[in-house]
Image (cartoon, rainbow, N blue to C red; front, side, top):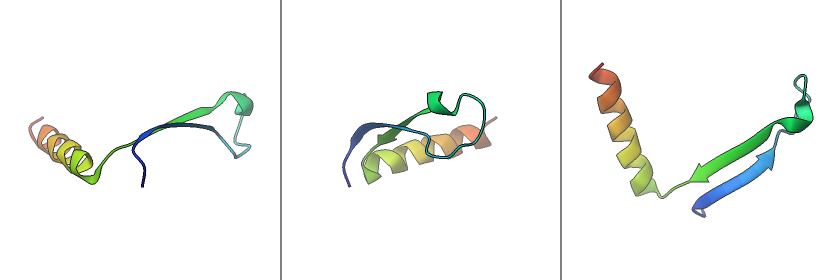
Length: 47
């Protein structure tokens, strides 16, 4: 429910260098997401 950039670290032991698997998530408003999605869909269909 909050916009921003959030940082974390992998919580599953899934392979070599597990401790060095940073995670970055950008949370945006629904409006911004729908604009991004529309542009993504239009781009994919125009290839």
